[in-house]
Image (tube, rainbow, N blue to C red; front, side):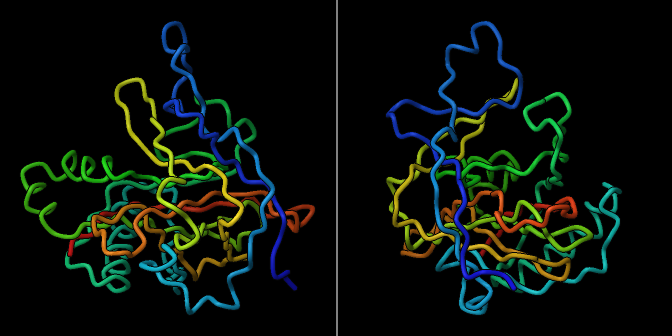
Length: 275
């Protein structure tokens, strides 16, 4: 029987009024002087079991929801099939759940526990460890910029209407027994809890939100998720009418993890939805 909540550690970011950054390469020389790493403020928090209220969570209210999802696709090691067959399943799912008229998938990441998660050399664009840092994938600036980068000549017209980014997160082959995902209820956050953080690549720069700690943040997780379930995570919304816009989340070490758990394997598919 799973508990109503667990006490764990989440890695927030110190609000020191200096731009933070997160490297996706090994910095050297002149790069090192710009280092002000995110995710260094480890805080003990309570994460609540969401299963008892699962039908009431909504992606426009809390910023996430859990829905049934087919487990018919299992060829996750075949990138061609992932980007054709599985992407189409995701598109249909996001349209059905959100009412979007058009959904575009722009990338995916398969996450597994790595023996050396700090070794950037063993990571690829699609194979990475679980992110144990409180973050939201986009900001008020980087969301629209992503649309411009990917949609080119269509971007201005698309940005004239509502645009939202949704991530689909689900287990690959097994029930999740370690490193579950925790979501922060957007209703428990203030806008100034979000901190701009630069993602630094060798050839480009992105921007995400990390988050400073506040004791009133309400964290939710769904222990023992199965392959027939998927989370929808909202990472950007152009609407400013009070609905959820930026939902922070993080993988975490569950103190109730079995002594010999099945390794967590999950996929996160990123989509942009146009209304």
